[in-house]
Figure 1: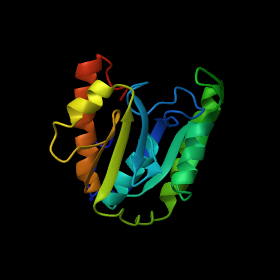
Figure 2: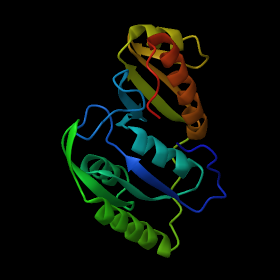
Figure 3: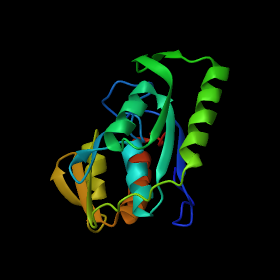
Figure 4: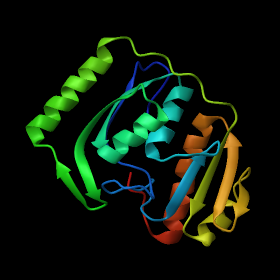
Amino acid sequence: MLEGLTPGHDAVVCVGYHARAGTLGVLSHSFMGHEIEDIWLDGRPVGEIGLAQATAAALGVPVVALTGDDGACAETKEWDDTIATVAVKQAHDRFAAELLPDAEARRAIEETVAAALSTPPRAPGPPPDPCALTVRRQSASVAATLLGIPGVTSVDGRTVRTRGALTDLYRLFGVWMRVAASLTHQQPYC
């Protein structure tokens, strides 16, 4: 999701995001459907929104706006309340929502992003270094296989942890997803 992001970028805008696994939201998940049950960054529950924001912050680039359902917008505000959000749907369930009309959603997104970019974005504070990334899997086999990667330790039979610079952890997490996909035949959603 952040491929190509460098410290030379001014801002990040996240479009079409969803809430993390285990929360109410349209298609709520964390990267891999049901395979990933939970993720923690330094002990704080995190999904795709928080991990993207923290990784962008590690590069010195602020996330200025995010669009998605109301669950994603609430999660964003819990993570960083300075990010402008646009809820384009209200979740009734994981598979049911009330959507804004297309023209209204587009207008709200355009206006919110323009407003967010109209003032110089504030530089985010850097995350701690090193950080701890912990992931609880549905499959004990995936967790056991990941233990073959240097620096990965077991928390319990389905949970693994590693520590490092956040930008390195983000890249390593991508490797973890590919290992999980090869073992479970479940591809990442993103």
